[in-house]
Image 1 (spheres, one colour):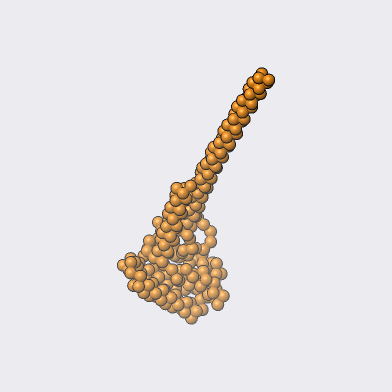
Image 2 (cartoon, one colour):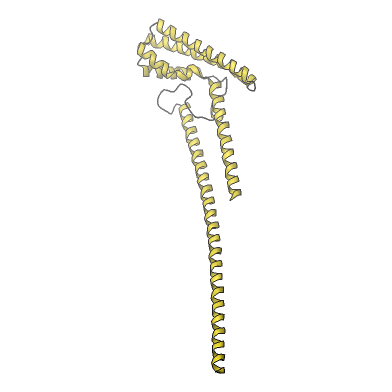
Length: 244
């Protein structure tokens, strides 16, 4: 009987020890699983962060390449390497790549451009071509004279919104007067047909309404807005990284 009790005691002690060991293993396994999960979550967050940065850098590089390509295209057009009629404007150029406020275009370039326009309009009569060139060249040069005056006013009133608005309004009125008088003379002298006049007005729309000063400061405003947006995005990204 005593031997039986002793044996049972040993068995119970062993079973208790095994039970404790199993519980310890279970706790360790659970702890290990939690540790692994935390490590996996951290690795996943790090991966996502690096992936987002890589994507952002790739996007910046792509935009830089697009800007370089656009710049090369603009230079090609200025050097006469591009086909088609191009008067002024129409590009998303940066201020650094554009003519400065008040700058003028060489007369030979004006004449070459006007020749191309007349070809596009189908104006073949030599007398009418000469009249058209003389008329448009004069209006173009008057536009540049007005722009030179406007460039000075813009710089003077850049920090005075009210005076700058008045200067812009006066500038637009003067441009309209220049080109209205040009159109009236072309019509009076019957240089263009009605259809040709319509096409000419459409082709020269930006030349009639915007000068180098207008285009320069519009490009500068776009550049400043894009820079501010990029800085805000960088700040947001930095804050998001710090919060993780």
